Amino acid sequence: NDAGKWDYEHVVINYTNGSIFKGHVDTKLNLIKGEYFDKNTESVYSGSFNENGQPDGAGIKKLKDGTVYDGHWIDGSFRGQGKKTCSDGSIIEGNFVSDELISGKDSYIKWTNGASYRGETVNGVFNGVGTYTFEDGSVYTGTFVDNKRTGFGTTVYDGSEYTGYYYGDVTGNYGTKTRAAVRSFQKKYGLTADGVAGQKTFAAVQAAVNQL
Image (cartoon, rainbow, N blue to C red; front, side, top):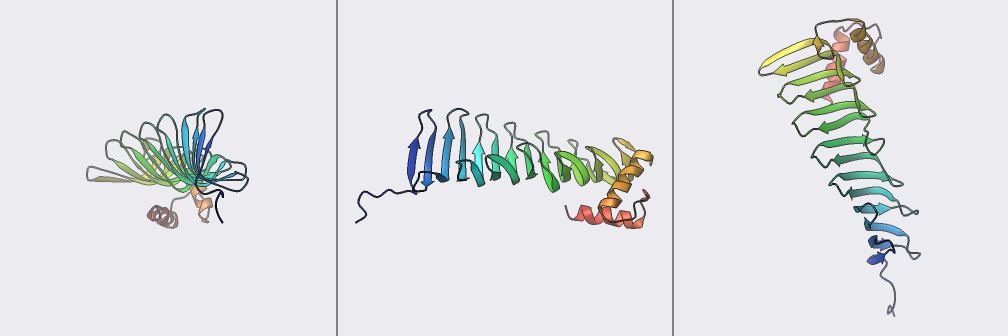
């Protein structure tokens, strides 16, 4: 006879502070999976929880201001592959190393003005090979150092194309900073780190770009 038994997969818990959980718990009422409304922050999390009652695994969290975190969680923190949609509509997508910053080869950021970046990042900063689409529609594909176009790259705008060496917004000057950026790229991709952008370096840049 199952009369009087709990349905642990469909539980509602009302906390004294006004927070509410709806979902699946274990026999000790530890949260497993469901929706948690946090009264203190007025945020809503839907997904999996760990033994400490913290978001852990796949889940979506919606903040009071409209910001949405959708992806992987570790012990209450947004970590790993995911997507953050900010309250202003901008998007950050990739491997999160904190609630705000992404690192990895396949990072994606889109701003509300139409500009976007797809490529390598380190702690939220453009470092490595990537493609940046500017607000005016021009597109740069090449290497970046600390959010600046640095090294070999190509810019396309309104049918015109420029391929060469960049440092920030200055083009055509293959100076010491550009050479250092090229050397860093060569080391990363197993090339001879001489700072000279020859055919092998060019081919490595193109191969990295094609993987974006």
